[in-house]
Image 1 (cartoon, rainbow, N blue to C red):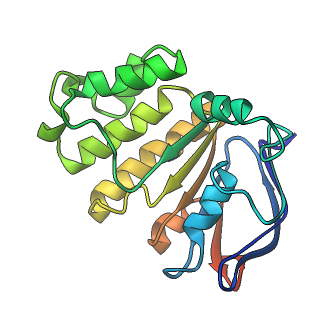
Image 2 (cartoon, rainbow, N blue to C red):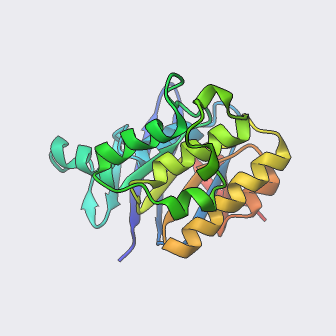
Length: 214
């Protein structure tokens, strides 16, 4: 059974953004999506991650049509099964690194995994205020906060867009290693062709469909 199965989804604003798109994905895979500004990359990610209902078609996660189930089930899915990483870290700036993780732990009812924090190289920074961390440390903390709930699917919208290339590759390298170790599915949007090619499958969103990158 696929973790994610997309069946014939379509969505339009003034023109078609996504048209009759179908694909499936399994745990341990990574899928990258590129595209010019305004092509609909973020719109597609919002549809896949339960935040925007497609005008046609269905999105199935764990064999459930997420737009046909009660809203309470969607909330539970977001809280425990789906992780979303944004370009901006959205950390609580008045909190320490540990306090940011404790919020995620409380909401997901999962204990903070110290080995995960060591893996991401932020364990020693836990007492520090978020504002005292570097950009790379903040983004690694943001990702660790998402992973605290041990999601089965991670959606990432330009997760390293605010980092220089060296830090971007370090952060994504850690994320790739994590999904391979845990059989998590990663779907991410990026503007960097080199980062895109590191995925199991890489696509260009063009003319309202996903075209494989070669």
